Image (cartoon, rainbow, N blue to C red; front, top):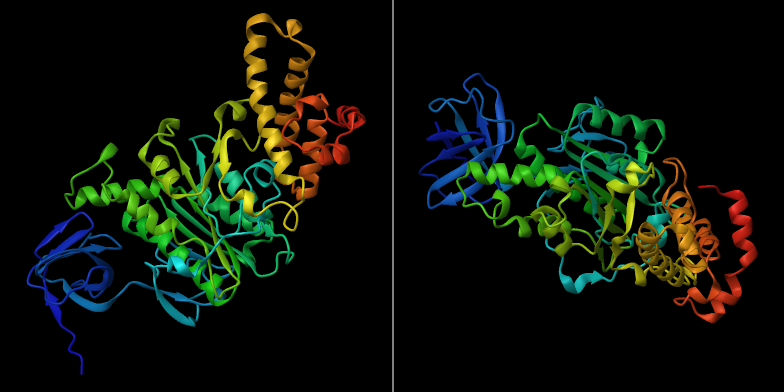
Length: 471
């Protein structure tokens, strides 16, 4: 018969941390229950062990904790999340407790929120794509099932609006959305932002296929550190136990990283770049690497982490380390936002490294890769033409450069720019790409082979497009 040992009193209280001495047989990440002298209890987890000295992080904070009268019980297991398919359509706090007033879920099983390492041998290479209905993502930075593709944003940009649109419109192509779900985790958001997410999901009718985890800015930082782990545990359960295709959206990873920094500082650890702990890279990796497709399951976990770059600095440790681990990035641009373009996706620095293996014939359309390559190449030349026009004036440009300027304006206003309720199919997006390419002389389209040019290129198409679209 197992003996449960309880410890009376604590040795130190420092912020959200409590320290106990002379603790035997404790385990890292073990769940701890603390009973206060007023009869209430709080949960915590072991975050540091030095011999028989144990540091416990208290989830609900250490207010009203007594050094003498607090009773500590070690549970002998890590923090586990109750899991059931009933989670779809429900709203939880950052620690996985329901906050929608519908009561507790009836769990089918419990899983450690830290996840189980995926054996690299059992990983299946990600193929096939998730259709977001947003042309600049679907055509040029295609989101592949099982991929991790972050969005790099800045303060004041519409990443929240973009996240809502992706949740509302995202679907898988070949099964018409069957078995598709979204796990949405918001970290460190204000009340009005949390209400915005809830209201938008409810009014669009997609909440029934969404599992929401909300951690508010006034919630304890420990809960912020738990939020993405709870979200990913729920995603893995739905994907690998129920064979669903799960899209995980994590916003904002900058708030998460700052919570890790604050927690590290309270433990007295030596800071690294910008005050962040030296293990931030491995901490991010422990989250991002929980995306993928596993052999033996038809489900998948796809991640879109959203992070706001401090001062718009893409070399800051948070976007820098994220870029090392993930398979590309979608970058939002303030200049496009100021020009009234939504979504303000900056095409040239954005990329999807797995895109080439999940598009083309059998997935999207056989001309997809060629159209994407040509749109990238032509938009790069637009910047050269704009630079030249700023020096010598637009009237002095050659006819080809003038065509590039028109292409650039139409591309930004009609391809990148779209309404937040506009859901384009991949066929509509690729046809729109051809409409734009037909604005240019045929000899400029050097990234497309002759067969595709013969099939799709038509100079009359450009005239029809000009009559329909205005910039």
